[in-house]
Length: 170
Image 1 (tube, helix red, strand yellow):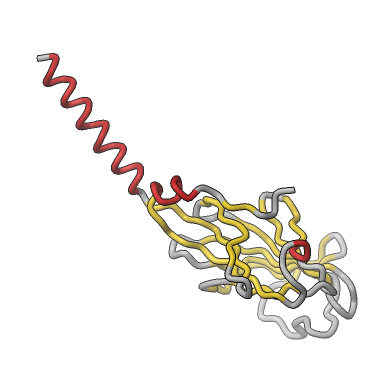
Image 2 (cartoon, rainbow, N blue to C red; image 1 turned 90 degrees about the horizontal axis):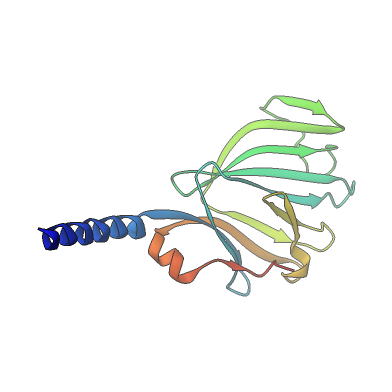
């Protein structure tokens, strides 16, 4: 009887391990498109949000864009915050604009992207903000370089074996 119990326990353990390790996970990826190198991989859940920050080249004011990870591996532009409508900024909007703390906030943009192409120009001082940590991209990507931010869905075991990549750690 004990042998049957042990076999059942081992079988159940193997089934649970297979299910857990095979379960797909979402990986936020930041890739230097020019160098074809991965700068960051991070396990996230749908609903996870991050932001980009640039300094407007004419007005030299900050422009924040907020993104959300979706279940279908896309990114949704959620909100934009800016301080002026200078050159290159939208002059007409189909969205509600709120003024708060010296920022114009365009909320509920809900534009869906398969990936985010983001140009790293040293004049704009671009950053990506993940977990409230501002990462200066000019320290890791050449001037006028291009990064792609996207979401991959992969089995948990594959993620565990590869682990996180983070060249931004200082």
